[in-house]
Image 1 (cartoon, rainbow, N blue to C red):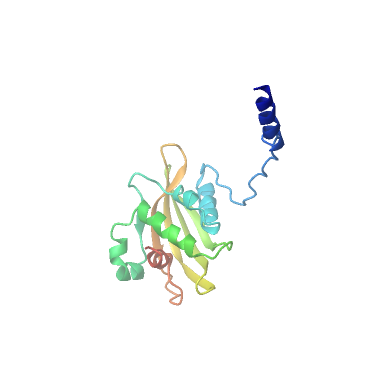
Image 2 (cartoon, one colour):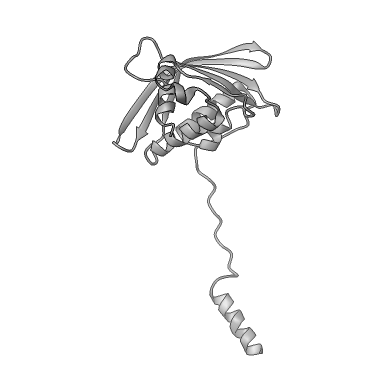
Length: 191
């Protein structure tokens, strides 16, 4: 019996089960998602979640409990009325998940804001407006899809004190009929 125990111990020792393993390297991802303690932090989280294709971080930028409201650009609503009729968080997530699936491999999505400003309308409500441009690197065929327009986001504090997007109004810029709006992007990848 002692020989069996000795052989078993030799076997376990020889296979390295008692050796310590090398520690894993810390996550080197450039994505930082901070608690949105201000509208500015919320918008940085929003930009990073789009750029680095992080569905959970993107979802965390929006208010839950059926309070979120998306108002698409007029041209998108006219074309995709059935899609936008009852748009809520689930549709937002579904569309974004499809967008990040279509974006090629390790390439990031380019999102740029111009003429952005915060308007404090009340102690608990802020309006963020900006012109945006999105460049989506898609796999098939390998090219770039470009979208631009103007967004108006209503931002409010949630119960936990963090800021969330409550309402998103999207507009096609009047001087640009070449590139579609973010609403069109959402509708195209809603499947």
